[in-house]
Image: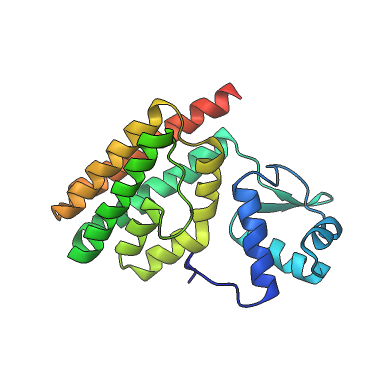
Length: 220
């Protein structure tokens, strides 16, 4: 199971983390071809290390291989967004429901503190970018579900692809404050141990986020 306060054990791990971050944040452009030779020069590692990183990125759904084309970074599309967010809505809705039942009072207090720190950021610079891992609201709730299979499906499966859509096409303008308010309501439901409401609010939040990203894709 993957956790994002993870530390690279090998040079292959380090290269994988660096390349994953570059793809998620758009430094390596969506749809671009990945050249083992160029990447091995850039990261000062062997082609074998790059090959392993690309295989791991493919397993994370950030890279796809096509016959006679090779490995490419996935493209962010309306169709891809729809399929991804249908799965995300269901799984993260379940995570919120389980978090309301399974998070300790201390973990809920920490989640509230995290949200307070996010509020300061929203107020000061009008953005709502969240790093991967413990400072990501959604990551904390997924962890709080305490369901190992669900955590693995999200973290090892779609978490970074979701982040790619969120980071590159995510919250700006009015969506920043409405998304924060939605987060606040989800935390309140979890705090009240209202599992049904927490799931409903999370599902609605993800639907709203999908609509916001869809509008950006349509206008690009």
